[in-house]
Image (cartoon, rainbow, N blue to C red; front, side, top):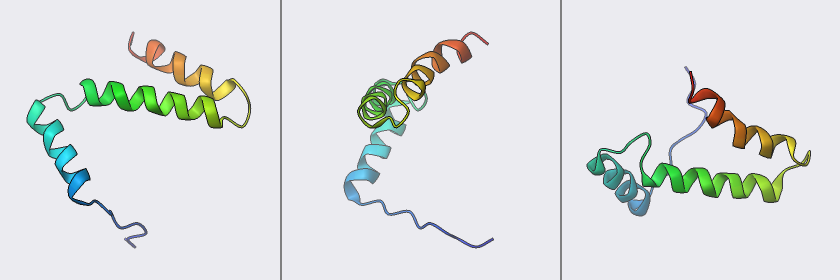
Length: 67
C-alpha cells in the first residue's frame, strides 16, 4: 500500500487526544459534542447547495441513533 498522507500532529494535538482517552469518553463525550457543533457551524457557513448538506447533518444523527 502506498502511504498517501502523513499524519501531522503536534504536541497540542497529541495532548488533546491524550486527554480524550484519559476521560474514557472517546465516542460521545464533551469533545465529540463540541466537534459536531463546530462542524455543523462550518457546514452552515460553507454549504455549496444551500440547506441540503446542513439538513442531512442535522437529521442523520437522529435517524441513525434510533437503529
